Length: 242
Image 1 (tube, helix red, strand yellow):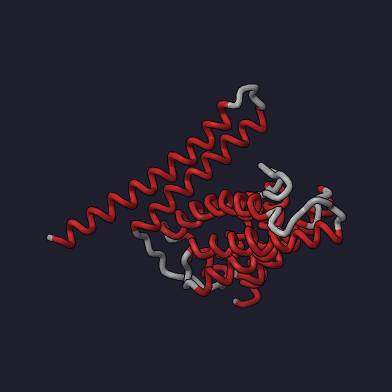
Image 2: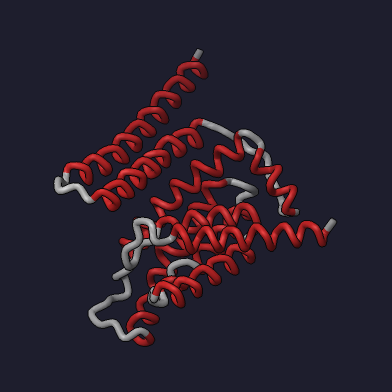
């Protein structure tokens, strides 16, 4: 049984590495690679922190070799991948903490560590310790939102625990509450944002209106999530008062 689970883990790891290499160029600019963060979080939840660290390392090395990506392919992935898995385990299966681990690990730690690597090893000039922080955080928020929606859907319909059981990793009971639903609504906006950005990059329209639309949509989803959260909280207070 253990040998079978180890084989399945290896196959899933290989698939995630392959998918990560293929989708990482989507919306990629130097300092921001949202789709890589999606793979980090999914791997953390499916396989755990050590596998996620290995997955991020392999993807980074392959991207550096085949796509001439600078070393931020590693510094911008490995810390978040590991912390995502650690936070997920420490929180006993809360997906939002897996996303938070990726944001802290990549958006802050990885961004700061990228400065000495890019300056003293890669030879780039004009950088500061916080140079990559804004773009790294932006990338993790987009990628984290997409991963959250996908994993939350799997958790709600029971597929996530089945996958984890098949892989031999610890599974947790899925809990869906008002805050969880609000986060899901807000995160859905990131998927729409990515979809529109892909269309813009593909068809390259002359007008800038589509860029404004994409940001408007993600803002609308965030506002909707806040309204949903406030309304539900007020209703809960009214019921408690009665």
